[in-house]
Image (cartoon, rainbow, N blue to C red; front, side, top):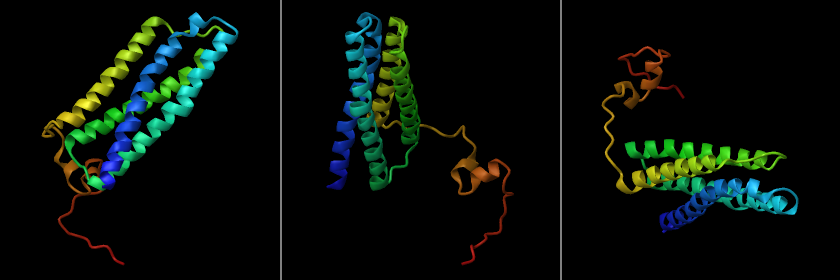
Length: 173
């Protein structure tokens, strides 16, 4: 039953995060149309509120509940590693949008229409890739990777930190 609630929280918070992060570039694109004075201040206040109070907590909750799901279900598949990489990219874009929220509303700031479109396309493509990975769960061949990556201690051997040994060493208490 815990997994069901975790999934519910994960999907709900992910929906809020995805919708909100798509809304923010559109709001930033309204900066020039707002002009100066009270309309600009209202837009700035609304955009900051959306980012700080709605979108960022939803992102945090989506990541926290997703992490709890990983631990609860012990997921370890190739597609999942790729999903985590894409989620990391989405988090990076989330931070980038937050930095834009801080700078676009400075005097003389603007967010060109092409940047709005490019942001929406990039965010949408990234989210669609994540959703596709989660729903399709494709088999991803890893034969091109070194075999050391799949053996305990293999990464340190790959980097030359530890010489491979046939002797098994037991830790002393």
